[in-house]
Length: 295
Figure 1 (cartoon, rainbow, N blue to C red):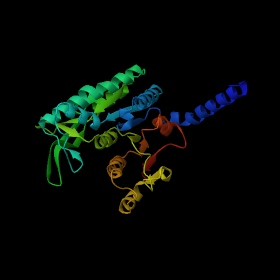
Figure 2: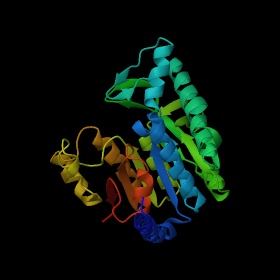
Figure 3: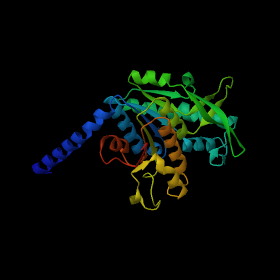
Figure 4: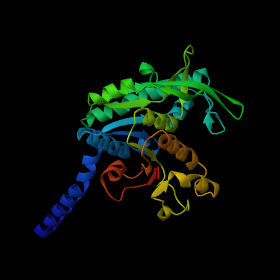
């Protein structure tokens, strides 16, 4: 590389940092809830990039709360013990034995793996489940009259333990296993997207970000260039009615609506397959993925 190319490269990097600075100032001291899953969780290089992003955000004073699922890992463990994965209306049927495995995989393995990587990257992280300090309470749900076993819907979020950790500079890493309501000592398997949205509301977060396996909301699902970058909350019903938002995107949009209706100003669906997509969203004017907001 010539001296001129080196100068150009340095100038480019300086410009990137200058453009990022206002965004850094804007988000310092604010809470950002990130729902983590999909390819970003399975691919080791992407996983490392996500953890680097979160440590950087934490280091400059942005309070990141990481909420994770682990469906593929649960499937793998069930297969190893010879138990068939069963789904009803798109939700995992969770009998008592499956619930033990869900809790073991999410809380005992994945949660601690994520905390370990964050520590290796120089961050301060603490692993929690929804059971810890009564963070998540849930009630058994049935969908379309079907018994799903120990699958629950979050009825209460007690964010005190999370706020305490944030105040001490830690990154809370939350697995979505919940305790039953008063008098119910059962554990419940909770949809991580839904739990993350409700945690964002309880924490009065400034942003709720879902890392997904798609670029965002597309006008044409076969054309990544048809990405819709911004959607006002009021436009969502008509977009669902016309099929622009359909299939597996609907539950993710519903989680964004939960957060928006609960007072979170901005929600995002971004592509976790893009390295450092979280930093691109947080610190650039072009952003990435789809932002949903109150108009």
